[in-house]
Image (cartoon, rainbow, N blue to C red; front, side, top):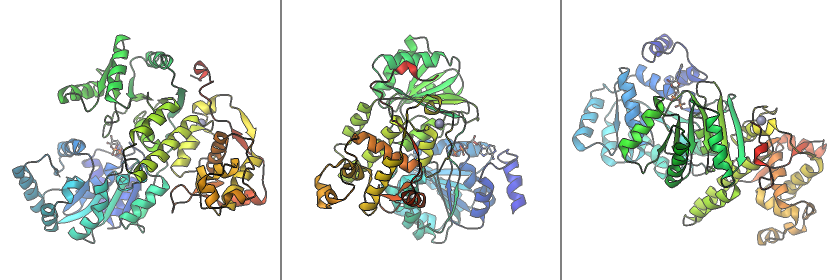
Length: 520
Ligand code: ADP
Ligand code: ZN
């Protein structure tokens, strides 16, 4: 089998070698074992199920959330001679019947299915009679409501698959999963025992930078930045269609070869703009987040977020579209806190828990933007990776930062967590430390703890930053069982026993910072 796999890799996909974890993943799945893959965008997830599908008997079901992308992927597979089809709501009855007959005749190697279609009774009946090889769940983070792209119908996948064929191996894949989301996915799919293949999220060739977003000034900086990258490909993300139009126009009148992309454009225009960008007719695409999923342009030299994204997960996926060829990629974000407030307001009609989850994601985003810590360290910590040294390749690493001695602050932060029995989140701990007797604080009698008010000389905002840095230093960690709860790590417990000197970084204060001082 191994030989066959290697030769098909070359023969069908044209690759002479596996990349990263691909080989052990493929082996694992082909040994009929449940497999969980976390790999950054562009690392080559598709091959992890496409190749096993080709060499296995029967049809692999691929569950994918984006109908728009299914056709693309199926076309690409067909183009290299693989028999693949999709089943979703865009097919009429006779087209769907045709697809089903192909599958039943055992010709189809991959069948892409939208989660909505999977749950339909008639399709369940049909799939029961098909000869299947395994199930691949793409964009598996959609299962978790703690993540940024929750799809309720994704939570039904497991029970449907169990009806269709209870012993079918499952491979779940995602480019984004915090430890909490990862656990949620595994539980929901009953894949706690699955073999986990997690690649590092570190993209060493990407440079991270945040600049304050100031009226007019930021537009000037945007134009200057793009002009200094003349002839190079770049993506500018904005939050609304209106803003996309406005920025695209601004660039055009400044003689920049740019065009807009958003779901409100006529499809012919949208497709043309996308193709022009892919074919180098266009340098810059100004887009909503609708752009980029499934697009594989290797030489995007910069990704600019003109508006702050809704989560660090989203941000990381979008910036991940820069420098896929391994060469330079500059990730620049314009930030102001008012944008966070605005985004939070958009959620005001959502159910309370949904809004609260979205708010936590937004606060993480704001914390990233405002941190003085190495950006790479911050991001990787967020995704559950420890990155010891400063990267030297982000704006924070490149600037002269204000450092302060943090030993006693960290002690206080850890004491607050300990004295509240490691059962509370960041916000609550800060309230206790600054001595704010909120209803919640008093109801737990936390106003009677020795640590209550111990840090009242220091503003609230600083404490938030200090506690976050304690997390980045691996002294505190989020409890995976309960959302947001902070616990001491073994390293944190050692620190309490024998405290040592720690350098902490002051957060940015963009209101007073000179925007032209950002290192270029
Ligand atoms: P992801 O789904 O992880 O974002 P893709 O599956 O789209 O990534 O793959 C990204 C790119 O890497 C594609 O252009 C793909 O052809 C290429 N690729 C995948 N595996 C290999 C490999 N083993 N060798 C060379 N290129 C590969
Ligand atoms: Zn850095």
